[in-house]
Amino acid sequence: MIMTAACAASTEKEENRRMRDEMEKSLKSELLNPWYPLSVDSVHGGFLCDFTYDWHPDESGPQNKMIVSQSRHVWTTSQAAMFFNDDRYRKLAAHGFHFLKEKMWDETYGGFYMLRNREGGPVKNSYQDEKRAYGNAFAIYALASYYAMSGDTSALTLAEKTFLWLEKHSHDPEHKGYFDQMARDGSLPCNDRAKTKAWDFATIGWKDQNSSIHLMEAFAELYKVWPDSLLRSRLFEMLVIIRDTITTEKGYLTLYLERNWMPVSFRDSSAAAREANYSLDHVSFGHDVETAYLMLEASHILRLEADTKTLTVAKRMIDHALAAGWDDHNGGFFYEGYYFADSDSITIINEAKEWWVQAEGLNALLLMSKLFPQDKKYDEAFRKQWEYMNKYLIDHEYGGWYKDGLDKSPEQLKGAKGSDWKVNYHESRALMNCIKMLKSEHELIKK
Image: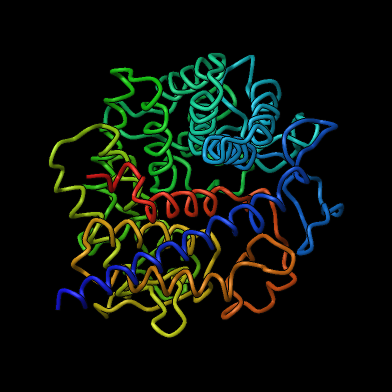
């Protein structure tokens, strides 16, 4: 038995080494190399986002620059610079930082614009000059990472200013948490839909899981380099709200909530009303597995001793996603599910397997397997997930990741590789984290 156990351990170690090497090779050659330096806008600054399946810049669109995608590029290149100790990524990160600072920050009213045109000027229609807590959260995330990599204090100063701008304009002192949507001057639309032309006007005045989890993510990144007492208080506030209020007892996130955190639900409405509002009320498996990881990261950065509550909720979220949204046949997480009023079981309403969902799933499954090694389902699912991604999601011919897994969305074989919403942050973070965990070097699993 001793020999058998030793052989099994040796086999597992060898398998982990193989997967680690595959991931590191894929990270470099199939993810980072296709994006950089191709995406660098050497004329107007920042990064281009729209690319065809074979990596030609898409000239049919305006190549607008959204704070989310620009910030994600700065975060990714900053992390890659530290991960590989490579000056090429340091230069790319600096290039992106200057565009954030010089073109996307509003010198008049403060805060980051949600969307600018390719040159850095205003865009008619869409968000116009409006701002989002969600977008400013990613700016903080990028600036903190860039400062950690470069030591450039101007980046830290801008991150601090952004946090305090959100504190002044977006934070709700009565019910806690943050409002997402703001006018250029930081004022809240207050349910006056005539004041906005943005596509997300229907959710004005509500709070939501997506901006909440990314504010927590950003505050955690910033707290690592700026241990401010107010920042710590807001990071803890967001962790508690997400864990205890936004996450349901079953283990999935409520997507939208009233100002007082009353869930927005169409479950008891007519079939037509439910279908018309699926975008506002469904189970998002990708956000659930991502949030499980982000909560554990926040708890770790806050140094909460013996935080069994966060661990318990995070585990419940992964367990629910595996039980309700996992494809037992091919692997991979489905995009959306729904609990109809007349059933306790979930119905999958969207079988697509979006790229970012699979990336977050890979990261979360490996983390759970390290935290709960006695429960083999996590390790088995993690290995199946990597097989799935290699077969259906990663483009081994042209590089990059398809928007959706080809098993459910074969048309994505020729789909766009990049857009303002699709860059490379989810997959870069997942692969870097998994490589570290397979080396037992990740902070969340160190004993």
